[in-house]
Image (tube, rainbow, N blue to C red; front, side, top):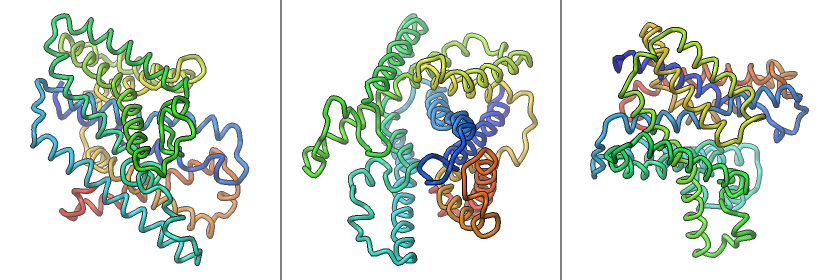
Length: 361
């Protein structure tokens, strides 16, 4: 299967994941308006975005081994992850201050940004930015990739590591010690009521969060390497239309029923890698097009910009279709998400024409 064909399906799935992120953020219980049970259940179907992005990142970062993890490698990661993270964090901080000024709120900077450590290191400038430091921390696991691929009987070893790391991730979840997006901490059951005002406690907090992120990312690495080892032996089975359909059906089945019948870690990983496999498999059966390519290229930027665009869409909907903003339903979520997705895509496509700006999206 050619890399060109492979990219087409993955680009399509990246676009789907970018849309899923927006839909998840298009209505929940924190909005302070009535929300239907069907809307809640519908939203749960779209939590696959971050798992898919992690799976795709680890898979394509390990597609060619041995990896050359040197200064140039980290310079590229800094340019692709750290610099966009810092720029977008600053942008969202400025946006919050601008909104406070325009709405004539008198809250101080300290009240707006009470947790600078979380803003700098954990993505607290906006609810979606945590993914970038999570990805950067997970990238350090790539040092293990070269070693694991050189071990004899690597498929057996990788299967074992995938199983153990998934169990460890599940234990982290059920013990409520995983990363807490709202409070930006981890292992709170082991270290409750920590005083984050103390500088040493802040260092410890960062260590614990990074450890939780590493535990989450390790099964993604192990499964990515395992999948690489399996596909190196035989990829023809992916080309069969019946198998493409079966993989898509499996993804839908786990996405709909996985949370009810499977441990969360298992469900998350199965959803992520079944969608990744579908993207690889379907690539041979779809035509390459500028639209799909552009969607894939814009997906990262769509992810980064969508909260700003969604805020603008909300203002427009309040003025034009106010009933949509008065409750959360499946219809309102689709209106929010489709509008925000299309406007975000358009904005990023235009921004990518600027060579300087395109480095940060």
